[in-house]
Length: 229
Image 1: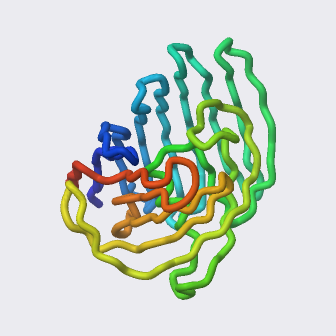
Image 2: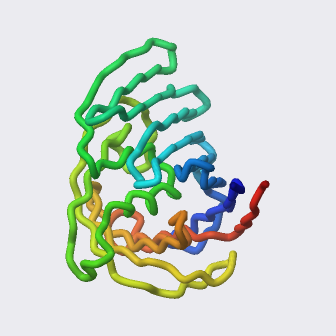
């Protein structure tokens, strides 16, 4: 079976039109049907750098995730999470290398959030596409209680709601993509519009429709797909 590799670059376009590189990402469809997402995110100010790796099963159930954060020139810490049965095991190292371990309940449709913008599309994986126009619950266990994820900790579960809006064709600098569209009322007081594409469900575009930084756009500016035998 071939290993299929998807990779791309997301830009952030500020409400005033300022554009910056934001996140480089790779998604692989693995030989066992699982999917891996790797992201490297750099904030427009250059003061935040986040390195994240997610592994989800064929049914999009989270298996494991790893994240490393640098903020204001300092190592902010690292986190490793592993979902085993109905429990999530969490190991956190702060910038001083002190480690803390905790175990949390992991309901069947819970996503594990480590704050990459590309992962916003994977948060939609448990939303029922057969119920368009209806808001559905979304449960995420995050690592940071801030919108931009500028800290790492055990975090907490956040409840919100998402509406599947149907299919829509979207054109971005990387090309034209047939997408699934969603509206997400986030736990942070924002309304986001999200477009994701294909079986790997990678993010093509996201807009902040309401809330802080309203008018901000994240969009795919580079994309490549290849199969490795």
